[in-house]
Length: 292
Length: 199
Image (cartoon, rainbow over all chains, first blue to last red; front, side):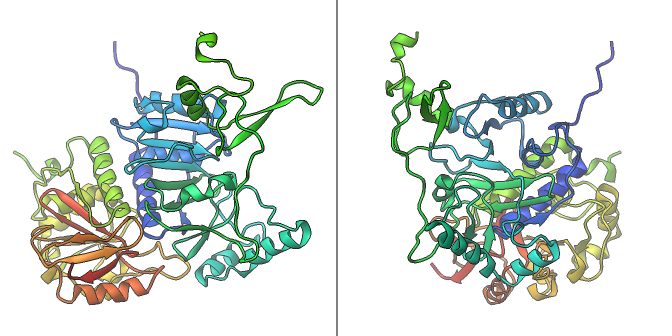
């Protein structure tokens, strides 16, 4: 019996990996600058994380341990299928535990557990250009980045204040990297922005449809844009997680019935599970013994 | 008989992945030494560390430049062309990757391509072989990728390296990036790194 033909390790062909690897090295050397790359068709639609998948496929090796999260959760469709994809095409070990992972691919959240040196966080990015909704022409936004002309972004934040009395942007909140490039942190809630600042982990961003890769090296300044009289602040939640009682974490609202019943639970499922394992119980949670 | 065909990676997929991770970690953490897997490098006078980065990064999409001494040996040109298919250029300013076997063969940094203000990524990455990544004059580094000041002492850097680097650094976001290789290890100096002499 002859062996069935297989895909190359980690799905992508070697020439594509080299091209993406070169883009990643330039992205690290120019923090916050969007490096164009020749994005490939992947066995999943655009919008499902093709950029992140291509970055992960180009860096991953057989010794890596991969975690994939979608809005903080390890068990949603996008996360489960990407994890299964790499388990199949790269035969890597996967995990749901943040601390065990060497590569974490994420869609729109940064894990609550602080990342460590040597870890790589790969973001799936839909629209990498922070100025795109203010200026649709690529030629113009490129010139604005080249000339460090970011006045328009401040006007946008100011208009928020004029209209709502505060900066109303809550996700994809623009940041300035190492005092130079204004960067879109991908649609993470602004709650996660402070975690990007001086993070010990390497952060790589892949936008498949838009053909861009960018990076924030470890220990790099990432400052959320704001005004002296309207400083940047993160969301605060009135109640703790209903399952594990955590405060100071990002919570999702879950509708319970059609009479307005709702609960707030941790967006980061791994963090929530670990807390419940450790015996923390929220208002609607059940103790560890009761659950068993 | 072993020839140029045996000189590349025995397992190109896995070895170029580990080489790339070493290069990525080196540039993301300037001043740290990363272990660089090397091929047998048969059929060329380039040291295995230069061959390792050449094979991992270049292909028909990247123009490469070999220093005068390396380029004067037809075997090196044949080796690079056979294994990578990369177009070879005669001027360092047109190269995506430059491979230099010693500081004496290194042109001044401003001879390489710093990219443009619109596309600073279209710049040269220089891979320079040095005698050793330690034992030379003390340098201290600061910048992205470093929590605190990092101290390094590579030997065999070009004369007035710190002065040349200062000019390169001032061009940001334009500028060249440097990879130093020796003894199976690589050290990265991206254009963001500020270098000062002494401890």
